[in-house]
Length: 214
Image 1 (cartoon, rainbow, N blue to C red):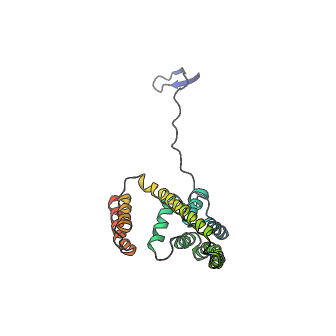
Image 2 (cartoon, rainbow, N blue to C red):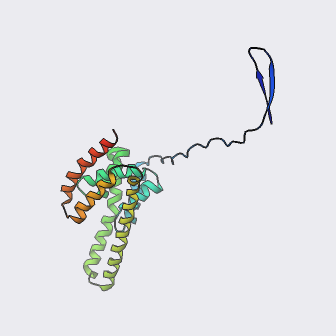
Image 3 (cartoon, rainbow, N blue to C red):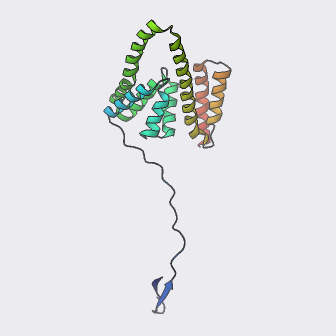
């Protein structure tokens, strides 16, 4: 119980009233999004992409997305999709383009060089070593079985990454899922050349997004 004084300006009288404590719960503020982590330094960029390259058996993209979006929170899922879209549209390896785009976005040319060096140094050293070993022992039946198992694991990693990247597009009403389905059919089913599909689908996708956000 708490006592509250009311003062009437007209009569000049003061009234005391006993108020019951409120039983209503205070309004709950909506949960805020997880704040992004501070931007990494140039050396942290190099170490991060160096580690991604060491873990990236079957492709670095799944590990890059996990490290950048989920573990270190340097990007949101939507920002990663946008950066990867630019990397996909440019010529060259997607993950190499992504390293340059991401590093350059944070630290300019120095960041791009650091991310690219961290990404390329481990696989170059490992592939050169394995190339020598494969030339000598590549016909071994046990090695063929190992390579078949690695190929299956790589396929699963890529499929999981595609599903994770598609979730932000499916959570809101947009033409993105239809554009993605059309591109999949054009490349995977109709066997149209990838550059032709990109040239046709990119302007259509941009126009649809612009129209829906007017």
